[in-house]
Image (tube, rainbow, N blue to C red; front, side, top):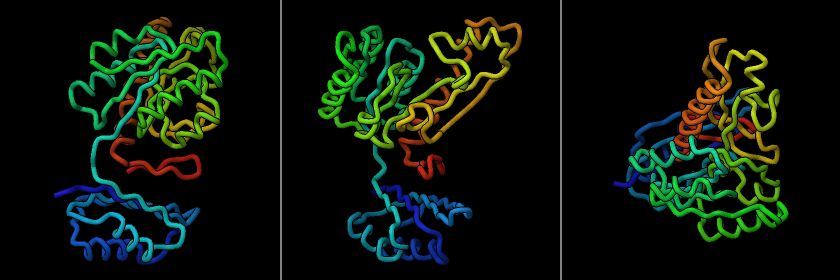
Amino acid sequence: MSQYVLKIDCQDEKGLIYRVADAVFKYKLNIIKNDEFVDREHSKFFMRAELSGEINTKEFLGTLEAMLPSGANIYIASKAKKNIVLMGTKESHVLGDILLKHYRNELNANILAVVSNYDELKPLADKFDIPFFHISHDDITREEHENKILALLETLKPDFIVLAKYMRILSSGFVKNYQGRVLNIHHSFLPAFIGANPYKQAYERGVKIIGATAHFVNDNLDEGPIIAQDVITVNHEFDWKEMQRAGRNVEKVVLSTALDLVLEDRIFVYKNKTVIF
């Protein structure tokens, strides 16, 4: 028996849950799990359901569209592994963590490739038999570099792109090609400590909390809808290298959590925020 994820967001009205349940009953589906939320400030309804059974998804969507308010966003897909591409630069901690989860079959995704503007990460990708593509940014413009990456992505056709400490700012033109499908991770010091060594700056300032934020990428690279965050405390006994190690551990956990939520279709994006079930 097939399993599906159904996601709906629309203007709130009375009887929405009843209408959806009626459609589910009509198609002889079983609701395994269901969550809903109403943003009362904007009168917005969100619902995610896990279903089992056998359906013609196009026909089912048509039925729901006729029952729900005009302009409703309806998504239904079978529960299956998604295809992702990882992009990195030189740091290996986040990339390695995702590759290891994939190796242990703990990631609900197929990793199509690792793409990097340097070749330092190739041995790591090779250890896990993941194709590695080095696309150098030397001696070419940013537009030329991005066009080369876009050409490769067009052949790979990923569902999502994960910036695993990819350290180049993506243009709005690049992001537009994969709107809502690019994930990024960054430390919690932005915008206070910017540059090559934010942990040293944080150490010198006496920072007591280190955290990380995973989010979707929009035109403002580090200001997209937030998916997951976490923090740990540090104290005067930490030097900047120990703070960096601690920060990298947080980054691994936060990006891994965010990626799982994305791969399981648990996220709604609304007004540059997320609703997560």
